[in-house]
Image (cartoon, rainbow over all chains, first blue to last red):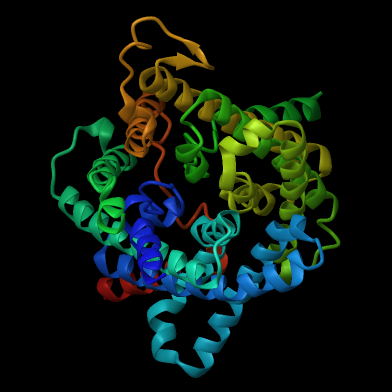
Length: 197
Length: 234
């Protein structure tokens, strides 16, 4: 059981990385990775919201939608729950934990339309994961997002001081750099099966 | 006559001048994820276009009814409803495509092109213009996906729309249909488009991140960076 959970966690972080293998959350990955501290702040907010969204959406799906044969409403319900949740978290943090709000708050509105959050909730349903498996998958996905963001922020800081041909400057070289980071993650293929198989 | 020309322009601007993927750099997730084969890319493009046209029409028709304060949640509900309809149609009539697109089909809800057009265009313009704007943007999105997926499928799998290409079919370069190939082809394509745009005297496409994001107005990330700049100026 624990073995299986950790295999889900490692798969989500390394072999099936949300950003580099599944292409979820590309906008913040390219947009907010210029500086290391914003990259870390954004990823922390993503981990938090992904875990929370899964914890809330799982019971709603199981006890409300599936029980009443309303599975076709999943997309609408999930996105609304996530949007409401993000707003709620923002308000609560602002009122009661201002320190945390000033660290994470600015990233929260961006996360509503982040495909990684809705993506992980839908993937959990598609894979038929139970509650523990869903939570491990979400946290793993969030951690994977953080690993990718932090690594890429480092790469981009180095890129700033490089001489780049004019036509590659800006977005093109960023994408090619992302491609190389993604190649390095291909190296993890099979590692999870070897450890837990 | 002038009105007609204006409408044609609403349609055509989305295809080249303001192509959502190649010029505005929106909707990057589906662009990278679904372009492993031409078939799934075109399917994705058409599904997103259908949602885009329908949601633009609905939002434009309701633009005077929706209160300004809750417009984003209202748009999300409208968009999610159309995505659900498209999802059901694809599941019923094209089960193979549904399997290929997988999680990316419901994720059309969070495609920034659709919410972006709702916020930037449909909420301010009449129904016909909004429909044409949605159609043009949809065609532009599909064309961009088609370009990306053609390169990736021909080089990576040695086929084009399932038909094998001589020479390449025997030795396909698998990396192009793996995730790194997606980033690489997109980067090279952006470089080529930027080069063409520069020749015509147009600005290069840049990742606007915040400006293009429909949530920008409520996002403090902009404001914080601005205030930091002000401080550093002082």
